Length: 275
View: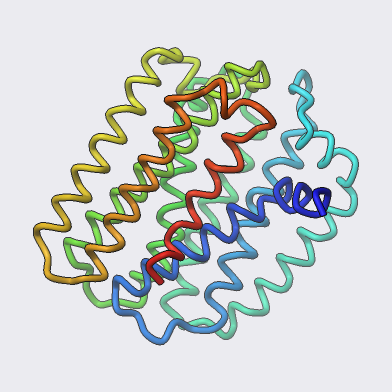
């Protein structure tokens, strides 16, 4: 039982499911109903493709730390490349069933994501552009989840923009936290990143301010709207940030058996509580 769960974790299943659940929350907040049946499937496939491709390219770089996740992708690399190709074909077929605005949005975002993955793979490990890697991933992940919903709307409310900002902050908080924890356990990548530039102490302060800003925004949303779902979703987003802060607050406990990764990715399942 443990091995299948661990393999699903290595294949980014928590991230994929978190993206789908977060997208459902964004759709309900934006009153996009009904959500086309192919939307969550395509979103799940695209997130899986991006994350798996990034890791398959990552293991080809020299001097990378050998973690259990690296070993898994090295062992099954030929099979995983075939799965990625099959997922891409299936996602392409399903795009013909999606609404036209979503397809146009996906083409643009997909092109940006592909360019990003190739650029990160080709850039030298000390290139200054890699300092923006975490913010860039957070933006692409958040825009993919929320933008696919907004593409089906003529206008976007201020409440939606506020909660998008909260989600973007949580995505950045998650990535920075993981980088800090990797440095603590000695599995950090040798390439430049925001953490290597700022240092662990400054990143720790930045993470605290992110939590503070997200929680305050959540309370502001709750007191500035009568939309009950907007209030509940704002509180859930605030709680997601608080959970990540808890990991940051007790690093020794969460470094054991990569607990920080399990819980850190698991926070993106919390939107299920309001669906």
